[in-house]
Length: 158
Ligand SMILES: Cc1cc2nc3c(=O)[nH]c(=O)nc-3n(C[C@H](O)[C@H](O)[C@H](O)COP(=O)(O)O)c2cc1C
Image (cartoon, rainbow, N blue to C red; front, side, top):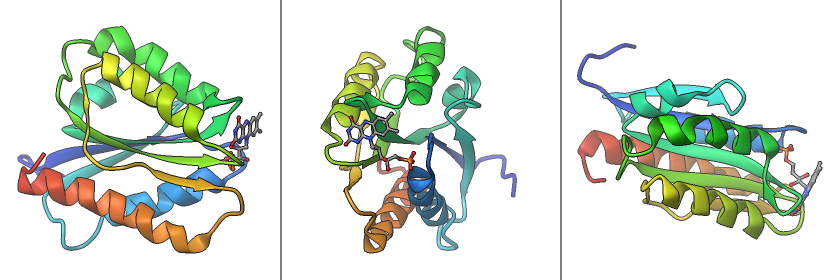
């Protein structure tokens, strides 16, 4: 539902074989929790999302698999496209990330952080990282992450 004074939460993710999208679905569920009334949630894939989305939001969540020790190419392409149009315009915006990896994940995490530090945005929650066999029970943490960002924006705590 559109609300004129609602806070805006952007969720951008990429998936190739589907497991990051399972995490994203849980994050989206959390962000749309019925206890959070006043937050408008926008979901985009990394290939769709653009600078207008990042300028629109009051906070954001990024989800990516680790590929070749880095964030996915699609997430990097998103950041390549938004970096200069958003530089200096999104300082201090709160964000958090969720990462899916076969056996590591640290390269995806550090590569995201390096670029986001350059954009002067603020990481406000620990990432959710699911490594190895997909543990369904970890989806609760993804849901919690979405809820925390949405509730925090609504309450003005970030
Ligand atoms: C091309 C490619 C490169 C990968 N590189 C890594 C890697 O460097 N580190 C890692 O932990 N997992 C790596 N993986 C495993 C993926 O992170 C893992 O399969 C993940 O679940 C994929 O997420 P998705 O199902 O959302 O596409 C790689 C997978 C692919 C297809």
